Structure formats: structure tokens, C-alpha cells
Image 1 (cartoon, rainbow, N blue to C red):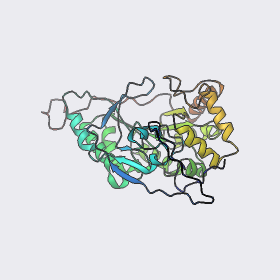
Image 2: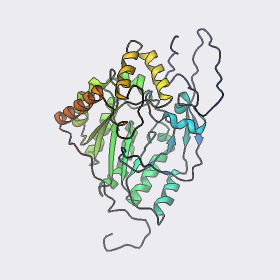
Image 3: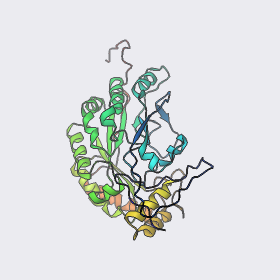
Image 4: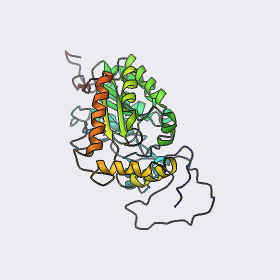
Length: 350
């Protein structure tokens, strides 16, 4: 079977069947038919709360904020794609072209932080989809959330692939004064051609490194997330990724091997067929070797590290490269000590 044609600016070229749907409509293929070029549609999300809790023992936070559901970045490997199936969409093209927007997120966040039951804790921005995806430049929902967090001085951990995070340096600086912020920039490759294919609507590697540099110069703790590492595709870049990040000011680093839950396996397999057909079986075979013979291992503990010789090689290469780059083996500790509810009676310590 011939792979589907690439859709310009998209990571996926298909909409796998939603696992919750019982009926699937499969159109007849038309020879030489031009692929659809879906425009991104933004839909209003009516959620009544914005802080999401998790009890996962292998994730470094227990609460997160996601201003957007779905992500226009279109990363072919994104583990969050199956979350769109809960909304009645597909994990493929729908995930990156049907984005739900939480317009009321800043107001909901303010309400939740003002609640007497709120105990200040680190909030991750974001735990699922990128808070600085392209539409954020226009809607500024993430920025307004950060404004609320800066006002309350609630600690914040940001993860993003987008240079747009530098727009909010003024607010991040305020949190940094209280030891209440860190920013991790995701860097998966220094190869612009691979980035353009694999993460089509993200910032270039050069721009991500520039973001690290600007954040570091502003006194904001910044690190690098080399995630995901895909054996046979970008694993050989680990030393260069960490070296470049260190030169840009990164003071912490993390590495996570790729995992392909649910429909992501179909999306990524199709992506490999279109872009790297000669490597497809090699890459998938190596992923299976890390995931107990499957393309995903959801077990706590192993899902963030993988198992077997290839996973061990990636871990060793990461640790050696991190040490050589001079990046410390620790994450910044964020403080809740400065938390306040604006408008409360001031104390001697204010």
C-alpha cells in the first residue's frame, strides 16, 4: 500500500478511527487525488475548572493548566493525541486542526487560587499540549494565566517548543524573584529539515536556543527537554543537543524515550512511511525493543524510561553527554513561600 501524501504544514496525514466510535466511514481512494488541506478551527471549551490533577508517580507535578486542548504544532509522535478522542475527534489531523480554546482559563484560575481550599503547589503549564502554540500569539490566554500566577506568586513550571515564551519574560522575571518559576524548552533535533517534517509548526532549533539564551539572561531558570528521543532517528543527536543547550544557558536537563500510545502508533507509522520509508521498520523495531515488544508500555516507572539495551544506551548517552556539557544533575526547586491571595490583609512579612 502506498503511503498517503504529505499535507503541507501538518504532522499527520490521516484521521485514525476514534476508539470510542463503533462506525467507521472509509472513502474510496481516488488515483492522484490531491490531499485535503484542513484549516485550523478553534472551538470554545466550556470547562468549569482549569487546574487538572494527576496521581502519576513518574511525573514531577501533581497539578497542571492546559489553556488549549489539541495542538497545532502537529508533532507526529505526540503522546497527547489520544486525548482528543474523549472529545469525539480523531487523534490524527483532528488533533492539530480542531483546537479547543479555554477562553475563561485566567478567570477560572483566579477563582481556584483564591479558594480557601487551595494549597499552593507547583503548577505545570502545560501537562498535555503546548501553551505557546501559534494561536496564543493572538489570543494571549496563556499570558493572562501567567499574569494571575505572578500576582498570586504561585510556583510555575513551563514546558514549550515555542520561542513565543520570551514574550512573557516580564512576568516570568517576577516569579523568578521568589524562586517560583522554571522553563524547560523542548529540543529534539538541531536538524532543521527533520524539525520541519516532524514538528511542522514549532519554532526552529535556532529559535528555541535563542529562547533559552534570553530566559537565562533574564535570570529565569531554564533547562532543556530532550524528549522524545527516537532510536534510529534522533538519538545520535543527544550530545550535540545538550552541548548546544548548555551554551544557551540551560541549567537542568531531562530525557524521555518515545512512546506511541493508542492511535499515535498509526499516525507515527504513517509519518515514517512518508518521510523515512527506508528507516520505518528499523525505528519501529527499536521502539518495540524498549517497550516490551509493543510500541507503548503504560506501566508507571518504565513508561518514562523504557527497558532493554537500547533504552539503557539512550540513558547512558544522556547522562554522559549532560556531564560533558556541564549541566547539573538536578532540577530547580521551586518555592511556595511567597504565595499570597491578592487583597488579603498584609502581614509583617509582606
